[in-house]
Every structure is written in C-alpha cells, then in structure tokens.
Image (cartoon, rainbow, N blue to C red; front, side, top):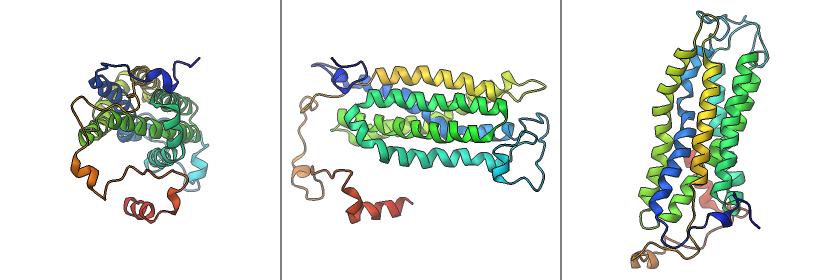
Length: 274
C-alpha cells in the first residue's frame, strides 16, 4: 500500500491534460520566490525595538553579539545574512537532496518544501517576538533555505518531463513564477506591515505569521496538484527530432550524482556560476 505522497500515487493516467501541471508549479514558485523580496523587511526590522527610530547597538556589539542581544536593534547589514543563507542553502539542499527528489517524487518534495519554507517563517516570527536574530537565521535562513531548494528544483524537473517538446517554455514558466514571487509578495508584505503596525510594533512578526500560513496553503495545493507522466510517455504526435538523435552534443547517458565530482565539465560549470 502506498501513501498519498508517494511517487506511485501521482503517475498520471491516460488522457491526463499536462497543462494542469503548470498552475501547480506556479503555486509553489510564486511562494518561495518571496525570497527575492525579503529586503522589504529590512528597514522595519532595523527598528523592531525602537519602532519610530532604531535603537543603535554600541560599538562593542559585534555580529555574534547581535545574534542574541535584546537591548538594541539589528543593523540592516546584519539582517542581510538571511538573504545570503537563503541562496547558500538553496544550492546545497538542491545538490544534497536532488537524488532523493527523483526517488520520492515531486509531491513529497513539495510538501517537505512547504513545511520547511513556511515553518521557517513561523520560527522567524518567534525570533522577532523574542528579538533573537539567531532564530531568524535558523528559521528563514537555514530551514527556509532548505525548503527553497527543494521547492525550486521539484517544479522544474516535473515540467521538463511533461514538456519534452517545449523544454525552454517549461523551464521559463517555472523561473517566471520564482521571479514573480517577489513582485506579488513584496507589495503584500508592505500592506500587511502597514495594517499590523502600531505604536509599539512595526508589524513584521504578524506579517510573517500571516504570509507563512498563506504560503503553506498555496504550496500544499501546488504539491497535491503534481502529476508525473508514466514511463515512456510522450506528447501525442511528437517524436524526438532526427537532428537531436544524431547530435553528438546531446546524450541520454546521464551521469549519476555520486560520480559527477570527477567530471571536468562539472567543475568548469561550477566555476562559471560562482
């Protein structure tokens, strides 16, 4: 007996409309894409204690002291470390658990991504309430970053399987959602902070809670909307182009992730991206 999240439960049957998959993908990417818009929180968070004006830390308070201080506000340069951790963990989690994703299936990966991304936001909200920056780094930076990585690669790999005839379009749809997440999330966050702001609060904690819960609902809907094609499936009337079949630059002999470290091409691409 297989569970509702197992890969075997999401194999599409005959006649399934593949165009039902992109909305599920966008539901997840539009949520995790808010990582690009987190800078909207920096200025309000830099006045979390002072509210109207920041309570500056003394010159003897360094970065590590800011992780635990409850008597002064965080510097904007310190808050930026959350953004750094987002994308460090995006890459490392995608590389570490990419093989697990192929085995477990995109639905399970999507649910784990939702739990990590949204759970990280709720932990960050607690960190704001307690004024403990280390909790924000752990919540949104580390745990949320893992959710960001899993939530990023599962939609891309799923769309490519459904659209082998339109790979560029499939990848573009996924990236569009990721980039558009900040376009939607940033104004929403600004409006929520304005709504929740009081004379004693900048409203960021409440905004994190609302957005975390809202994103969780949307990401779960997206994860449960995932389907994968059956083995050997291809779009009706489509066959791989003859030029592709004879092109020596294109191969179906995929390299296992345990062996990729010894391939020069991997390190060349890695250096270019770094």
